[in-house]
Image 1 (cartoon, helix red, strand yellow):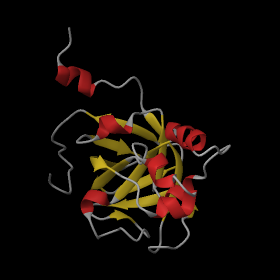
Image 2 (cartoon, one colour; image 1 turned 135 degrees about the vertical axis):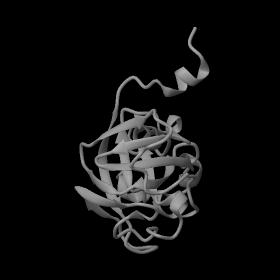
Image 3 (cartoon, helix red, strand yellow; image 1 turned 180 degrees about the vertical axis):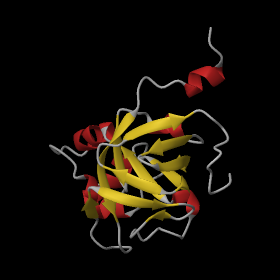
Image 4 (tube, helix red, strand yellow; image 1 turned 180 degrees about the horizontal axis):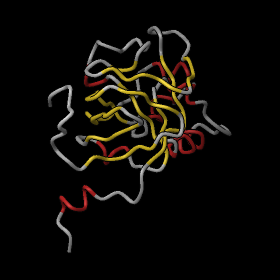
Length: 170
């Protein structure tokens, strides 16, 4: 039987970036992008969170949860821009990336913890929107090594604890 550390490091396959958005200001409309620059220790270039809190430099949401949210809210679909996350990724369990480093495009991120919904979800999604988002809000991450992130880029967990090209220490 495999050890827990082996199980935690094993993923069935890489994920993929399905959607990218930047929030230029606190309540501004999300700008949908095909590519974005991740800045080490800051976040995404042009996003209002860039430079404010490295632990929440990038917010990620799992694409598979969009269908769950739509079902809970009795909608046909949910526009990712309504949820105000930066990246929607498919094919990888974001919860498994908490405390892990992973590469997207040429950037390296580290999952720092869950990204809970804010009270604005009630306003954006309607009554019950906040509770619908609970447990489906995604993951916060910090940018360890800057680089480009593009639609379709793979989301690849990194198994090495020490990266020789690391630009932001743990």
